[in-house]
Length: 115
Image 1 (cartoon, rainbow, N blue to C red):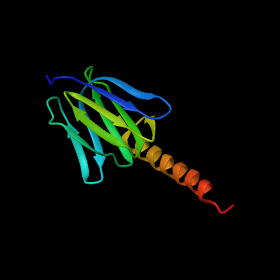
Image 2: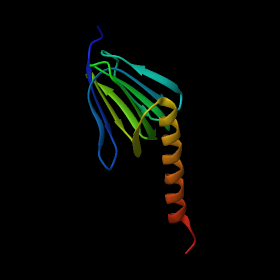
Image 3: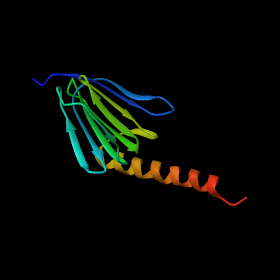
Image 4: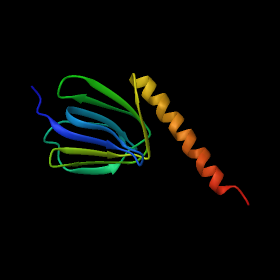
């Protein structure tokens, strides 16, 4: 059985997911990254897309995220994201991430409008 480690997925609004997991799969600008217990320390950018978490219980949670950062340190994974939404499936998470990205672009556009 795989060893568990602690995972936190946080956004400015709330902690989206927190608990013990045996696997985290996330996207970075360089590609997909799989994390198991004992992973070497890492800090990097988090790409817009789906994050998959397999809990210690075997339950899988999929979260659509819009950018942010991922940190792996001392058997703890922290994902800090601009926006996040739990989804029913990987495809739904990708769609949610796309929607979150569009909303962020619209919000930025409002601040950049000539006035």
